[in-house]
Length: 310
Ligand SMILES: *[C@@H]1O[C@H](CO)[C@@H](O)[C@H](O)[C@H]1NC(C)=O
Image (cartoon, rainbow, N blue to C red):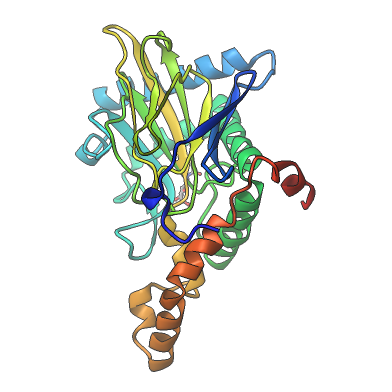
């Protein structure tokens, strides 16, 4: 399908609207993401309010007790408190869990956030939005990450109702993303992002997809699913006194490589002759892997039938 990385393609980024849901398609009609409105559940605004309260409380209590390491404030996405949690890949090396090093107090904070029922519902909804926009890719996540968690039985899914193994809780008070790529996410993969809080979404907080030359309104409670590694993205700032926080879920690319290499790093694969040969074979297939990854996207025409193969 694609012979070139997404960022090397000239994309005009067409938008398809259906009420407040939106498919983000490239020139070839490939659905590379989208925006999914909040579900119709009657209590969903309570859920969103509770998620906002949870993030706000975590920030205020955590800062009062000085539990957050400075790395939670120093990340390329901006200068706000971002709490990472879940299974990821540390520096492309081995499978690791956030946060490292563990501190008991911080662990208590994270458990409290993860056990929050509203947060759990939002996490599940983000995962469903991903399945809705990219059903074939969702199945691939299920297979590879399922194998990962089976192999390492010390790893746990933070949200039993979500396919994503890692989350970032962006606690604000103004979680405004600076233009960046998420290099940690799988190159072909998608990440889910939902803003919450109190801000006028007509005047700020817009999602900017620089690579696609798209700016779109991004109201609290809307879930964006975007190829965050391939597409440089950021937010428009909000007005003074407003509050914006967000929840993001993703899967680190290293996890898929770790599984492909037979639960090893490329480096450790190199320690035997047959391993080296295997590594070369796997890496030679880089272009093939890329195409393989990109074939996991649907087109707006194939979407309906892509669900039916479940
Ligand atoms: C969240 O997931 C990480 C990684 O598997 C794990 O170490 C941690 O215990 C989990 N926390 C909770 C509260 O489930």
